[in-house]
Structure formats: C-alpha cells, structure tokens
Image (cartoon, rainbow, N blue to C red; front, side, top):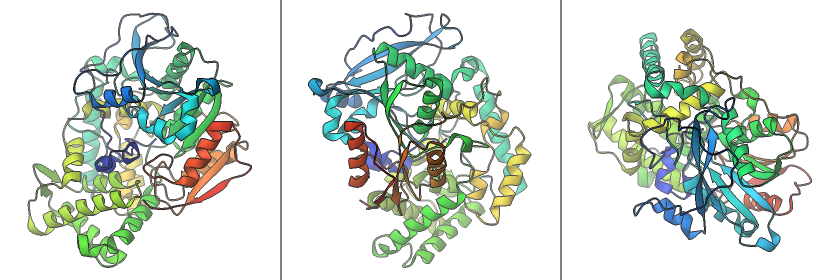
Length: 515
C-alpha cells in the first residue's frame, strides 16, 4: 500500500504537493455508524446536486462539469446483505458525446481511503476528448471522502514515525503504535474495523456497477487504486473492459508491511531533489553541489535528533523528521522541488538559529502530522492497511529489520521498517486477495517511483503477459498520468487506449520531462 498518497499535486493543488503521504480528507461527516438496513443494493441511484452548501467549492467544480451525485446503499458486512448498511457517495460526469459513448469509467485515487468524488473533474480533464465518450464515475470508498469516517480519535493524521536511533526510541514508538491501535479498538469504531478492507471496497464497487446498469466497467486505478483494481478483477472476472493501473502495486509485495523495501528508492529521489536544489543555490542557499545539499539535510536531521526543532507551535524530533522528508517526495516537478527546498530552508534556520515560523508547506503539513485534525482520515486508511497488509505480529521483527537497514540507509531505514498499529490490530477476517492470472491492462510506472518501486510494475507485468508496460525513464514521480505531471507520451498513450481499446503493440518507454 501507499498511505496517503499521495500525492496531491496531480489534482491541481500545487501547495498540497507536500502532502504526498499525508493526504487530507476534507468535509467529512461527524461519525461513522452502520445505518439500519436500507434499500436493496444495486438499486438505480437517485442523482442530485453535488453541492452540499454555500462553501462547498469541490461540489461547485463538479457541478460545472455537469456532474451529478448520489448515494448507493451497500451492506456493512457483505456476508449479511440484509444486515446493517452503509451509503457510498458516488459522482458521475455523464458522457457528452452520447452517439459515440463507450461506457462507464470508474476512478480510484489510491490511499487507501483517499477521497475520489471531489477530484473527479481533474480526471475528466486529463482524459481530453475521449472523456466525452465516457460516463466518468468516482466512488468514495467506505469510511472515506464524503462518507461517514472511521474516526479513532487519534492525536495525529498518520501513524507513521521513525524508530529513532536507540532501542529506547524504538520501544517508545512501539508504545505509540500500540496506543493508536487501542484507540481504534474501543468505542463505536471497533465494530467497523473488520469491514474496512480492499475486498469489501471491491465488492462495493461491483454493487455500484450493478446500480449503474453496466455489465462491464472500465477502470483507472492510481497507487493503492491499482491494488483495488487487481482485487476487483480477481473477485469479479469478466466485469472489466479497459484497465489502466498507474503506480503499480504487485500484490505479493504488499507484505510484510506497507513501506518495506522502499529505502533505496526514497534515497535516490532525495538525491535527485538535491541535484535540482544545488542548481538553485542562489535562491535557497542549501548547497552549491548535490553533496553539499545532502550534507545540509543530514545536518538538519542530526540537529532534530539532538533536540527537537521548534517550528511555530510544533516540535520536530528524530521520529518526525524522516517522515517529513518521505512525505514530500514523489512529485518530481520543479514546483514541488521548490516547495521542498523552502521547507528545508526553514528547518535549517530552526536547526541553526532556534524557533522559526513555518513556511506555507510546513504550515499545511505539520498540523496533519502532529495534531488530530485528520484523525478520521488516518483511522480509515490504517484500518484498510491492517486488513490488507497486516505484517508481523511481533515488534521484535520490526526491530531486527530496523537494525539490518540502519547501516546502509540511516535516514529511511529506521522509518520504513518501524512498527505500525497493525502489529497490535485484530487479525483480518480474510487473507489479502491475489491478482488474477492474466489481464490485458495498461500498466504505467516511473523508474524512480519512491512509493511503489518500479520492480513491482515489472513483476505484475511478468505475471500478466497480456498487459503492456509504459515506463517513464529517469523520473521520480509517483503516478504519472494526468495534467499536473503532463507527460504527453504517457497521457496520449493512456487516452488512445481508452478511446479504441487497443493496447500498444509492445511496451513503451517515455522520457521524463520535469515541469
């Protein structure tokens, strides 16, 4: 999985590019609780306005595209279809070229538990002229987006922390993770946890398909959404038409825990940012060479480990600093690189001179990380992760992994191998679903993707001989299709496939062009 993916600048919100990992779920309802049994699942939606009030800018953007919104009823527990129910927020931008309509294209933005409905206009715009031939549909996954959340009352918007430098640090973080898990397993959220999983999200998606009256759907899955598409294909063979997976998860690589094995690619992405920043030393003052820029980063990390850095009301310590660096990678645009440089300049000042005020990027990131503002998003996302990639049940396994990785990867090793709440979670009801044996899909990935290593895309491509792989060479972007990254080679290939349903004759390599 790729928590909080990401990865907001592709949605046309450049300042939020720093929330690569700590995505915000805006305008969530106050509580999540199963509703009484509702109308039979699969009933045709009652379409209505997407605007929820005078301040609903996302709803107004949807309306401007011609979108209509609805709620579809699904069972809380799919083994009890007549039991308590949930409602899922669904939006549809209808095809405008009805004479040449191809069908329905369902989008998932990843996460898990990232909102989809509010960002549907961006996906429709990326499709260009072919978008006129599809009903483009977004489904907010259960407990996410416009749906009632699974809010555990956390004091943080993500469980992610680094293990630190000592065994005492590690034990402190294990206690932190144990407390987060305990908060989810008490009160009304406890009864919801078993029902937050990718299998159930896939079952929900199929009920929406039926409610829309479609025999088959096309699908665009981004990051974690690639795994959702794979699970849907495994559970409901024959119900997919054209499939694009962008930022590809290979299901066998989900375990032992979500970020395992990404140390090297994240360091390479950080090195790439250092190269860009060195070329802009006159503006940021972080170093004239990539080596000097990395030395600046290392000095800030060391200072935070020695004494927490004071940035506004927040304190950034050895457990938080690596999370900040991890969170801002994966955009691979000059604008995002500049935002990272601004952040590092602020942190450098805090390390050298004492308390500082946050720059705009940190002002957006730190509340998500260090307050309970986004607790609802964090709880929903973690429940999915603990159902799909629960990992080992013994903290000692994580400690050994931290120690093995520390020597070669002192910055990211203790972070990506640290404990998670899943260590202390109720075991999932179902095993992770595997992908089908073969699927004629279009797979898209950058070679330097720091969230989902390129090797995963290649592994899934090898398992699916009917698929085609579009590679963006020398890019450190996570999720490359769309308007923000604006790689014409990728976008034209994806849109041509959605238009005619024909995969490229062979695999393709596109050249990275940093916007």
